[in-house]
Amino acid sequence: MKPTRPPLKSLDEALAELLAQALPLPGSVELDTFDADGRVLAQDLRSELQVPPQDNSSMDGYALCCADLDSAGGVLTVTQRIPAGSTGLALERGCAARIFTGAPIPAGADAVVMQEDCEAFCSTGATGATGALDQVRILVRPQPGQWIRRAGEDVRRGAVVLHAGTRLTAAALGLAASIGLDRLVLARAPRVALFSTGDELVMPGAIAPQQMRPGAIYNSNRFFLRALLKRLGCEVSDYGIVPDQRAATEQALRDASRSHDLILTSGGVSVGEEDHIKPAVQALGELNLWQIAIKPGKPFAYGRVGTTHFIGLPGNPVSSYITFLLLVRPFLLKLQGVRALQTQAQTLPAHFDWPRADPRREFLRVRRNAAGGLELFANQSSGVLTSAVWGDGLVDNPPGRRIAQGDAVQFISFAEFLA
Ligand code: AMP
Ligand code: MG
Image (cartoon, rainbow, N blue to C red; front, side):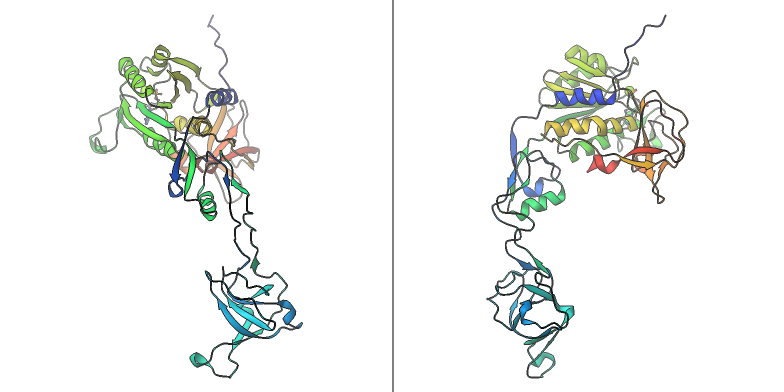
């Protein structure tokens, strides 16, 4: 009789276990706002001023008081010119101010008429460069408040514009700058030691494509893993390729565990004789999680070497990529104190058939089409990295589910993971 193996962990169970281990890293760093893209705030950002600071014009045109016009419009005397960056004087009755986008609204004005709805002219009748345009005929009567951006409509004084635990997007950097912050207090960058395993691996550049020996392949995982780690704000130490030997694997793990928060490996975590990661981690530390019921991505491992977290990703590039997105990404964000870790799925119709149900939860590489449906990349092999480049997301297919044309499926855009 075959020994019965315990069932594989589900993705949800594995993620919950992983996140329970990912306690926010102690300490914080202060960085220039310019350098904070993708990093996580360690403090709330509270505004000491209102944005915009004053009521201001959202058009190039004329600021006026609506009560000075009759129902058809009227003619007003232009007494001042207010470009952005300057402030005007209080507006007298019957007068208008030439005003430009972003310039403060002068006291006494309650609307802006855009220049396309006016005719400026000179009171002496002079035309061209000789005559100052000191009169304006308003052709379209404005509503009070028209084309005025209100003081504080973006940010109120004292408001928290961004909370601790927020990951900074480009727009968030702009918002921080808009309240005057040139330095930000951020969660410490996780220090990650990255290494690839596999005697078949060659670094691009080390050997030219025409000279590659049979059996050798280029190391692709190292490139996307490093890029993904950097985007998540990590400091990466790249240990390169570790040979498929137990002693070398242990040595690399031991070295890396001294000064990193996480050791991230790819490959060598299956059950073959050339897979040394699992026994090496067990010898030096502990392995808490091994293998998950997902496809691709079953050979995933989590453990510790000393106090350093260890995550072993599968060697197959698509498996490595997808397990990073599903598991490592939330883990690294949680280390930095991010609370919103959930990715959003959309329900969309499948424009393909997937007739073979799999007992594991599957993540299929698909692409949205112009008809609002999802197309499947023809080759879903875990070695075919083209699928992850061609696709713009994943179908999250529950265990045991077949898919037929038109079925509603759960789609997670890669943008959810790569933002
Ligand atoms: P392993 O998990 O070590 O058995 O590797 C599974 C498959 O992934 C094998 O076909 C390896 O050649 C391939 N592989 C492992 N590491 C990498 C890597 N860094 N880049 C590209 N392919 C890899
Ligand atoms: Mg290997």
